[in-house]
Length: 419
Image 1 (cartoon, one colour):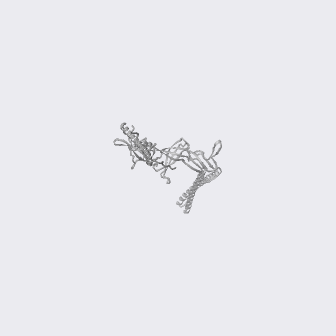
Image 2 (cartoon, one colour):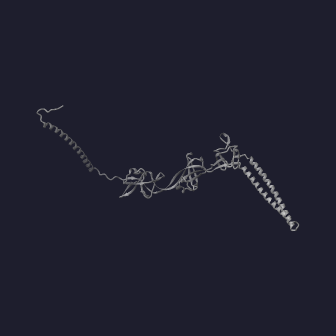
Image 3 (tube, helix red, strand yellow):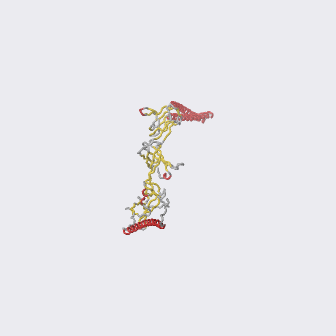
């Protein structure tokens, strides 16, 4: 809609009204800015006046810290090695002669039933566990006995003949000296003496062979039985049955000595020189919770395994209790080790992901302050951190290290050592 000026109105007065509104806006903005400025200045003056009139603030008090002195300590280190329980001895029993299995040892099983011996049965020394049919070997022994008797009779005949030939030769020799016997007769008698003497030697050798044959026949008869060679043995495997035909040296039983067991494990070359024969070691087994066994080292390998570069070690336990061959056990080894130790609470994360740091208390300008130093760990011993020292390390023996509360400290902070 167009607005037209009324007749007789003056343009200058219209624009004067417009300028008056702009002046009002400008003046309003100026007033606001002045108010803000005065507020800021006023607050600053008030703060200055408060500071100048208030009490003065002194230096920040020193923080009380507990320190430990880094020194070398000797601690007992416990090492654990995974081990395997083994039998002390194992033998493979076999008959030294062929034959037919006639019987096996009879044992009483559950329910009072009698059965043949088999795997797991406990046996005592010298107990007969298997026998062969001895009929053939008894016949051989009887024949060997008769041959020995015949050989003995032949030796006696040969001795008698040799004695008679010796007498005849002496008589003939005397007659020949008196020219009562011809030379040919003397030579014939001398030859007969030599023959009878040689026959006596042959018969004696035959007698010795007959005696050896009888001894062998008796040994074969004894070898028809298998006996337990250990004081306390357990059947690990049985490989024969009654009425089975077996060959000489064919495996029949596998027995293990259960009076003692061995615990076998491997150690690195850094430790093998610290072990001694007869040294006591503790053994535990997860299969027997709460049980602990004590044994002594009875074998240390003289050469390392070519693959693992570790040395075999065996512990003998004379009272195995429930330990059985094949069980997995743990061998516990305690040894003294020298190390520089700090509480775990003295170590804090460093500036990088794998870095570690601690605070060392030093004296600067007559006051005690803490300085951040990087540390490298050499393991955990006795629930404390083992510190690695040497060339290039910032920590040294004798340093005073803050023990606790390191997360509240900062580098250069004044501290006071707690009594």
